[in-house]
Length: 442
Image 1: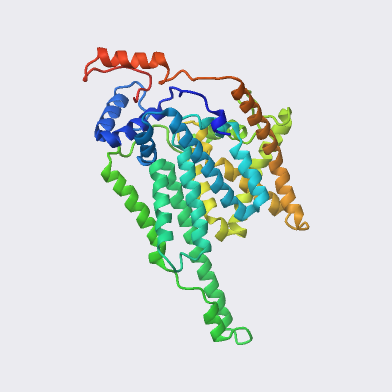
Image 2 (image 1 turned 135 degrees about the horizontal axis):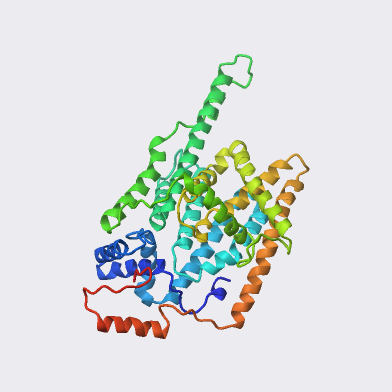
């Protein structure tokens, strides 16, 4: 579906050009030149916040083998982006199927996977989908480590792999730091759970009236002691990866951007409302209002209900299933907090947030009608997700049909006149000349 919705060429954008220049520098040995050139560009522009001095090196490293094979081929890179999107949807399904069941997890995955907002962004060489792949993969692997008892004993490699995935996420996009919050939440739930279980067993053992309090039974049932070294392993591996990459490849260091802070919460909530609604099928691109099945009022009601239920669901799961949901709660709260105070507005920043809004809204519905007979809670949750699935399927069908009818090539850096312009610049300028261009990072 993503490949069917991709155009020929690539838009001008600007982020992709720095990613690709960093990728090329891995082979040319000019990584420090990239940092110096981009820093010069930013500091001599009237607008200084359009770019960091350099991006994290995770995405350029992912692109590197494909650049080596295909050269500067935007079409090949966009296939990589589409593959990362597909992979991230697989891991999203695995994460949610454990908590929702396969049918409703499939519904949630299809809402996201068929959202025109998500699919449309696979037409651009950016780091969001590689980040989504690594991040969702890390959250799924946290579930695996927890379920297989890796925090208590056994082989060490699962913990090392988990640390690598957490570190890699951060070095693809810096909001990957939210995975440290997810990991800390999982470990906190693990430690608290062990302490509570030990206290209960201790109380039972000291109660002479408790016939079940046989000493051997208590010893057999007692959870193992907390293995602090095992818990620290993932942090250590993540830290080694991050520091090693920072030392081995030049980075721009920390940059403070004006406007960052709690004062952004109100403006961001207002701006991202429409983007979130668009991603879940409750708003059409270009139409300045929420709507569902042609009704503005219905769209607003359903959107408000989803947000309210998501908050209820998050709180409910924190109390009713803290061990199972610690990872997704920790990640969701941390990454939402990061973008709530950031002064930049990009709809794609919600890509790893939107699925969990739907997930927690579903869990709230199940919680609210939880006393009903067995199939009713799940059916109620499915009914909540159904409108978004219907509208996104309809929207992506229309978009794909239109895409297949028209052969569109984007006027961008691959266009013949653009290549002619680049060649003219090379021929008429010297190595120390300064060339002005809008948000130039080529």
